[in-house]
Image (cartoon, rainbow over all chains, first blue to last red; front, side, top):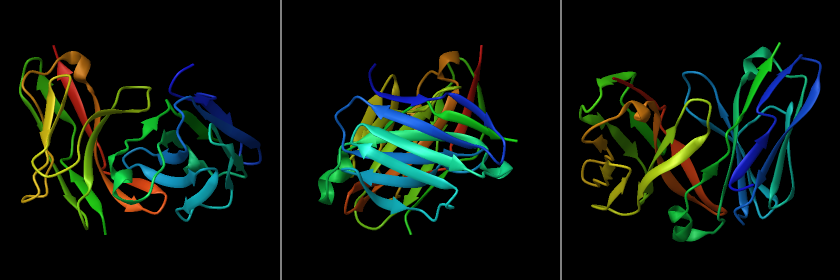
Length: 118
Length: 114
């Protein structure tokens, strides 16, 4: 496999369920990201991991719990979600760096997981 | 704060028409600018980028020029195809300790009819 992969591609879950989304990148990157894409809203950055350390959490509710066991894998654990959490969840990766060089590095996205909360 | 504003869609064109999607930004410092494209059922793909003023990014017939004086990065294509139908996102890259953070516009839907 190449690039960024995400599983599952589609997920339907009830509000009391617990599930996890998985992301894997095969690009040798050290930064990974979770985004939420809802209809008619801008892409929302949720979490950032840099060299396995969480470096950003954009006020995401605690029912979303990220995990980054190594630089190639990223998980998003879900529990007691609400219907408004239904969205496309996108994972991305990039080279990690600091300073101005970081501005040059584009992010590579996976195909996303379409989540429906019933 | 840092932000990106894109023209609202959907934009509907006939095949071989000229395309312009406007994008303006607000940022401190000198960000890098990107256009991403999202085809139906897929994630975002980088279409082109520009890293400094007056740079022109180009790919697959699409072009955009980094205009610092007007803080713009408009996307253009001389002759669109049905296969260009997708959502287009303008984005800028801002500096963080860990690396870059992308700030996205809301996206513009493009529909091309044959």
